[in-house]
Image 1 (cartoon, rainbow, N blue to C red):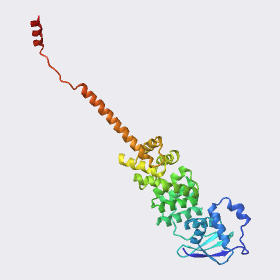
Image 2: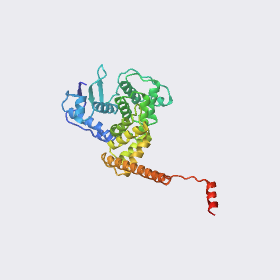
Image 3: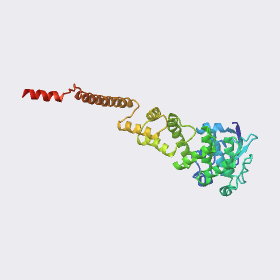
Image 4: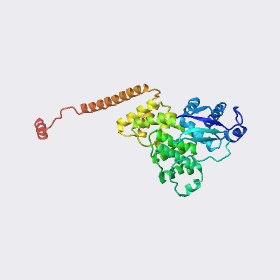
Length: 333
């Protein structure tokens, strides 16, 4: 992404943070967004200087998409104005309190259905903006069903524009463009109480590292984990205190024994290991050895019992001729 020109709307070239910004804007803004705005103010010391999205991302140790999300936020707040080239790429911006309305970004109009919920938001630039963003990520014009679903994120789940944008970005970057998949992730986030991009990123980092490891071990593809399945993993990690390599070993043994994902079966294995005081993967070998010894002892006991029973019956049975016995007794008298 190329550089763009900064145009100063302040009366001098000093680094100025206006009281109005601190009083009215800073408190309610995301901390990362504030950093982006302050970085812009810093570069206003050199009017006409160029700065790039990638340069800002490097300076703040953020992604380019995070920087663009922050710029869009401050534009909606009326503190800067973004300028776009013919490729719809940011090529410039003006910083400072704007006294005119901000024109919407030119775009191919997405279909806006006439449902009750949509009517409530028809006048809001946020809905049209997120539809535009979704079209860029999904690479197509949204259908009525898809627009209704995105509206559902606002009206029913209470997602902010930033969280909705990150939701779509997160799903697409993980290879899922289906609106049904995106909705399932949104419902999972709502159930987890996720209400900001920061919370979503934190949850995603844990989910990506540990949850996906379990999903891969179980061969689960093309869906998110159900809440009950997520609760199992949380218990294994937090309540049981197992490392992910031990959990994966339990999942592998589950597949070997029942040939399908079974969280209850894996939970039983892990509970046995918890009782056996397993702390490291190496401890599992001792549990396996003891289990094998117990198994052999039981087999030996059963064999011994069987042999003893056989010895009790191991004698020659005799047959008697009762007539001959009576004859002998009579002759003896």
